[in-house]
Structure formats: structure tokens, C-alpha cells
Image (cartoon, rainbow, N blue to C red; front, side, top):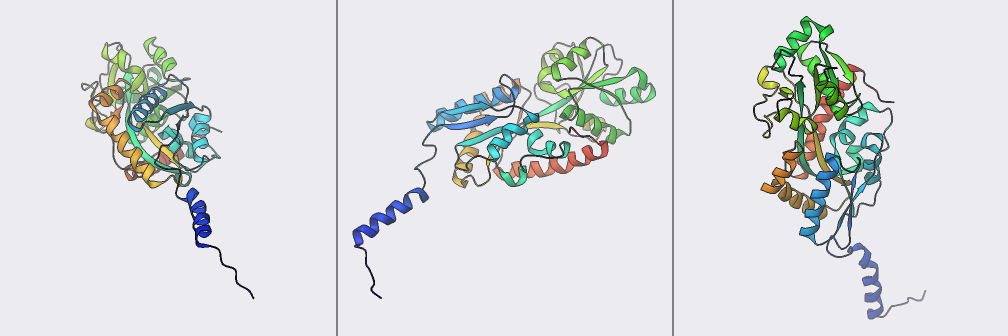
Length: 324
């Protein structure tokens, strides 16, 4: 059998051509990056995403385009990222809902957050607050629960909608205290707050973001925040744990990418996002929306996802909550 030999120059040329795609497209980012936000424009998630996108663009010299993909409690937009090419050019600023809670609330999910997404960076945690109308005699959560147990017909606690973190926090509160509270679901934080201000309900469990102005002005009473530490923007409100109630409930924002995103891209994004949100400007910006900066390596985000997954699975299953 006759052997054929390629000239050395031709072989080198072919090898270079084959190696080109494998070697990548040069330093990342070499073109605009899409940051998907799975919630509507104008909300706190969107505003935080646009701030981070602008800062990343300034630092890395490429445009970071925010793309709002809404629907199914954040599942649609997060799924779009899970199914995107893992090349570093599609990422998401998502929340603990689609990243953790939704898989226990919906019968079927279009993605598996553990297998289909790469954790990149935790941005912040937003505590919930349990706030009451000032006409309610109780001025702390422990006393409120005691009064609600003694006279449940006159104590109704609102929440922003079934399956929301405000709802789950109330279920967690019932499990922690052994007191089943009468609850009322609303269609969002703002309608629930309006009901509270108008006296339709006596208290409300919701992320602190929408309630900050009324709490600051004394139009609402902060019975407790449900974070591990007090919220810096309203330090006079004690935590539930300080009052002997073993509960922690926060909603958190995090940046993720498709599984398989190059590790050097993940590391670069993690470093830059940590620097952005840890700056004095970043901390002040996030605090406006109730955010407490919480940074660390990608592994810290994975640990938080696993920890919250176990916690909220237990609460959701015990309460029998289903959204479809």
C-alpha cells in the first residue's frame, strides 16, 4: 500500500485551521454580552441588573445588554439562559425563586438549576419584613403572634401571592411558633401594602424593598426583619431570631450562566461583580432596594442554593403549596 505524505507547510496550515475554533475567539468578552432578567423592566431585579451591566461594560470594554424575558415566576427567562450556548455571552441576573423555590412549587420545570446552570456570583440578599398597621397594639413580632393566637379572627396577615417568598415566610413562621396565622394573598407587594395601610389586614409579610419609605416615615410598624442580621437601612427593627423565633427568609439575587460556561469567564465575572457591589457606591445603590451585599466565590452561591433548597422544600411540602 502506497503511503501519502503531506508537505510540512500544508500540514501546519491545516492544523492551525483546525485549532482555531478550539482555541476560542480571543480574550473574553470580544463582543456584547446578553444579561437576561426574568422579571419585568422597572422592578428591583431589573434596576440592579442594569446597574451591574453598566459597570461591567465600563470595566470590561464591551456592552452588556439587559434582556427582560418574563413569565412563569422567572422560569422562562432563566430557562433561556440554561439552554443558551455556554460561551460566556449569555448570563442571567436571576433570583432565589427560579433558582431554588420554583422546582418545589411547579409540577414540571423546563430546566434543572443544579445541572443546567453555572453559579457565577451572589449579588445580594433582600430580607423580608413583617410589618403591621400602627393601629395594631403589638410592636414586635413575638407579641403579635401571641395576640393573633389569642384572637385569630381579628388578625389577618397579608402576603404578595401564593408561592411567593412572603407566603413561604409565613408558613415558616407558623412552623417555628406553632401558631397558624390567618393569611390573605394579594397580587403583588404594592396591592398588599395598600391593603395594610387601609386596614384591610393587620400585618404583611413581604420583601422589605417596597415597604422602606412607609417604615421610615412611621406609617407602618416593623415587627421583625427575617434576615440573620438587622437591615442596615432600618436598624431599629429587630430580627425574628432576636425575638426567639427561629426563622430566616430572604430573597436573593445572583448571576448565573449556562452549565459549561468557561471557568475563566466565570472567575472574571465573579471578581468584577464582587468588586462592583462591594464598593461604597454599590452598597449604597443596593441598600436603596433593600439589598444586603453578600459576596464570595461561585462555590458560595452553590452552597446557598443547596442550603435554601433543603429549607424551602421542607416548608413547601409541609404546607402543601402547588402553583400548577
